[in-house]
Image (cartoon, rainbow, N blue to C red; front, side, top):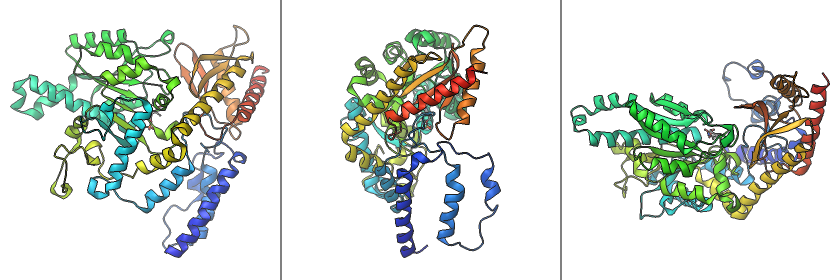
Length: 498
Ligand SMILES: *Cc1c(COP(=O)(O)O)cnc(C)c1O
């Protein structure tokens, strides 16, 4: 493609994108295709000769779009949201146009500097202590924007393991004889904690590092949040067995039910375990700290006083496109000690000897996208009030949904609604009915309507199979909530009449 073709094609593409958003409601919410549909439709090898752009565009519309589930559709209520904004689309265009790997300050100074600026903006919006600001040079805390919560958890786990092994080596002088062998002998003793409700990113990070993961129990009576006492008991038990608890993945808003681990109790218990790295996975819930009315001061105070790191996904409910997981750490040296490696070609003039101002030292990969631009465009265009307004609107719509569902006798809400999430199921009409089977039937009925709405079911411990509805797409309005309730009633009627 040459520049003049690009000019025409890009203009046309922007027009198509505008048409897409103007008419998104007329599209089926979920892709109505069978697994393997695309391999049957497309050639199994790349074309030998280049093809005309018009043909490629036609095939995009004919074959790719029908295979898309529309997460920006106002009737999309599955998983967690994956917000898009026009600001983000423009940022992605510029990011692609200016493609560069951003690994060092001198790879493109604005990439590094804007990242630290927007991280500080977000830290302030969330009420994080200045210990986590990147541009406050009185300490070494700060952040980096990683690709996702999975990458954040792995990155933090690598850093926590390094911190623990170094601290242990200092306590054991015999380690210096053969440090590598000594570390290899210590790794099997390490234990990472999460709960039975922690996202699999915790167990997966441990698996990738060859480290034991222990899922601590949580109970319905605590709304599935980890209690300090449970953590204390686990630490005592593992220590007695000669194991070394080195990291806890606490969650602020679990994926299943938006459970919140008791960060204040955890901070208290962890006082006597200096080796334990306290991380908060706030992938979905972190943005709610931007709402003063939703920011439990006791929790934030505990986080600020004692926790080592937190990551949240702006690419979920935070109005920024994939991939965007701001990750804050109390001491960036902990990242750099585990992740920096500087061959001659990467040495740059003015390089901070502590290496905190080159992004490559704070992440696993070397090259990465210019992630800060979309955050900057969005935050400037929405302002903090516009950003808060978006979150409040989703929360109000979820509350409206829950309030109206409570008046529908066929249904019951199975967990107190939190933020954009409501969990519910059909009530068994009498004791002879298996409530799980009934709700599987409800889900089958909802799948039949997946062109009209999208929900994702789950299993809640001590409850069973249930539906999850999450409001988060900016396009959703009260009218869509009404429509959803109507469809739910119709599905309930058909299931219950069988
Ligand atoms: C969504 C989610 C994740 C995974 O996030 P990615 O950015 O897709 O890796 C991890 N933890 C929690 C609590 C989540 O909700």
